[in-house]
Image (tube, rainbow, N blue to C red; front, side):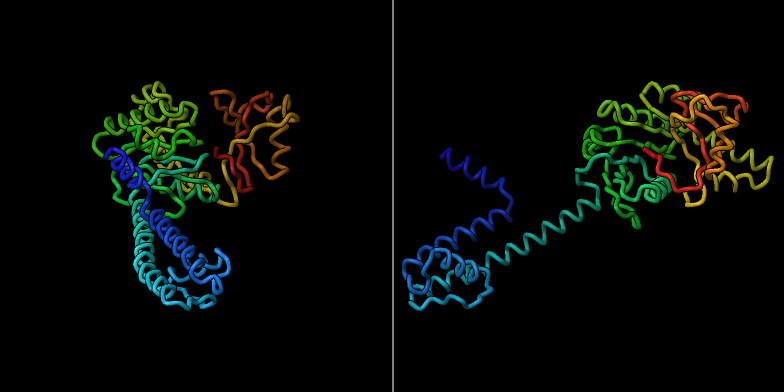
Amino acid sequence: MLELVVLRALVGRIPLVARLISIVFILATTIGLIIHFIEPDVFPTWFDAVWWALVTVSTVGYGDFVPVTTIGRVLGIILIFSGVGFMTLFVTSLAAKTISTVNAFREGMLTFMGDEHVIIIGWNERSRHAIENLQKVKPKSSIVLIDDTLQELPQGLRHIHFVRGNSSEDATLKQANIGLASSVLITAQHQGSEFSSDAHSILSTLAVKSQHPEVYTIVEVLTTEQIANAKRAGADEIVESTTLTGSVLINSLLYHHMSDVLDDLLTFNERTQLTFSPIVEEHVNKTFADLLNELYNGGDLLIGVKRSEEVLLHPPHDTVIQHGDLLILINRLHASTIK
C-alpha cells in the first residue's frame, strides 16, 4: 500500500505532457513488438513495426506499412482511437501550458533566469524614461522591472521581464535573480508622504544589499534628511531628485531656457552625450589645459575630472591628471559607459 502511495506521488510530480508522451511511446512500442511477431513478412524488423505504430497513433498514416491480418488491423484500430484521444489531450495540454506561461510572464509571476541584468524597482515616468534610454545605449541588455502596483506588464514595453511584488521582500528579489544582477536602480514612489517613500526605498536597499552586497545600487530619495540613512543602507549612489529638480528650476528662472540646455546635455542621442571616461597611461601627469586641447581636437569636450569622491568641474588649467582619475566628457559619439 505504501509503495502505491509513493508511486502515485512520484508520477503526480511528472508534468502531464511528459506523461502523455511516455504513454504514447510505451503503447506504440508494445503494439509494435506484438505486430512484428504476428506479421513478420509485412514488418520485417522491430523498428519498422514501431515506426508504423507511431505513425498510426499520431493519426498521420503514411501507408508505407499496412497490416494484413485481422489481429493486426484490430491493433491498428486500437492505435488510431488511442491516438485521437492522447494526441488531442497532448495538444490541448501543450496549448494550455503555453497560455499559462504567457499569462504568468505578463502578470509578473515567472522567475528571471538570466544574469548580468539591470533591475529597476518602481514603475513611474522616471523608470519608463530610464528603461527607454538604457535600451538605446545598450539594446542587448536584460532589464527586470519590479513593482507591486502593476497588475501586469505595461503596454509598449518590449524585452522587459516583469516581477510583481514588494521589492523589500527576499522572495521578490530572488524571483528577479538579484544574486546575478549587475546593477539596481531604486526609484522613489510618489505615494503618500515623502518620508514613507524614502523609507520604502531605504528598506528596499537593505534587502538588495543583504541578497547581493556587491551589486551597484542607485537609490532615488526625495528628502535630504534620508541621504545619510540611504548611505547606511549600502547605496552606492544617491540621487536626490527634489534638489535636482529645484536646481533646474532656479537656473531656468535666472537664465531663461537653461532647462533646454540641460535636457539636451543629459539626453542620450548620437550627437552628444555626457560621459565618464577612464584615463589612459599617456594622460597621466598632463595638465587639464593640455588634455582639454588634445581631446577637443579628437571630438570630445573635457569639462572636469572625478577624483575619488570629489568632482572637479572646470578646474584650474594647471591641474595635473593623476592615476585613477575619471574624465568628465561631452562625447560626440554614442558611448556605452553604463555598468
